[in-house]
Amino acid sequence: MDTQRTPRPEHPDGTGWRVRGTTAEEFPDVVEVYAEPMLVSAADELEAERRHPVAEHDRILVALDGERMVGTTAAYSLEMTLPGGPRTVAGITGVGVWPTYRRRGVLTALMSRQLTDIRARGEAVAVLWASEGAIYGRYGFGLAAFGLSARIRNPYAVLRDAQGDPELTVELLTAEEAFPSLTRLHREAAATRIGQFQRGDSWWGRFLKDGAACAAVVSGPDGPEGYALYSIANGRSREGTDARLTVKEVVAATPAARVALYQHVFSRDLVTRVAFSALPVDDPSPSWSRTATAWWRRPRAPCGSGWSTCPAPSPTAPTPPRWR
Image (cartoon, rainbow, N blue to C red):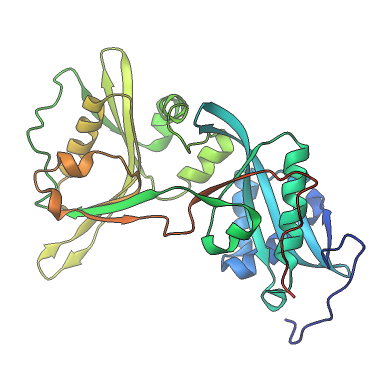
């Protein structure tokens, strides 16, 4: 671990740091650099990539102090639904600066190069989910969307006046058993939900690797119409069983299918708490509840973060200000 700052190198590009691309062989070194400031396990990141590869090695950039990597950023090529329809966007990821190099212009050098590259590829929009949203406004990003997390305790998890559609049935499967239905339903829903991106097999592998042991699939006469992915953690309290059901994702093609899925998760025996880790802000479930005030809701993106979008800058645009 370095214990002192090294002098900032000067380079002809004017940013103060040399930025270059990387090779697939350098990927473990890249992960080591961004894992430290992001407080994640480099070993876990590498294992996830080995099992479900999503890295685009030609879109990874590093900032160098001499030959040492001191900052990283990367991007995914995503198909995201925007106002006007699906578009290819740059999904920015893997942004990190080694802790003893913070506030020295490393991130500015990386973002300036990355956004220029994105424009050169013909991508008009860059998106990210910011851990610290206040950082990115100086590079042209702005808040684009909120998500919602919510929870409710039994016995309040009851839908009011919801009789259900007698033609719909719900089947409980594993995520693997339900996979063909999950992929089709998500693909169709993502094409109409602004901010959603399409998932390939590797992205599905990442999404399902934890937190989705159960797949409730609702079907009608013409086949599956929706699903809820969830897990249940059993527990005990002084009062007895204290099991928590956590819903990872709900997708429904019709309101009736959504009602059937909520009736299913709310009716699981021995469950005392139901939590939703990610809902769109217009999800109707609280208004459908018999006791709407019993819901606890929190935006998943505090002010200044969330899915942020940035039109890729013109090559002639002024260089963003950098730390002195």
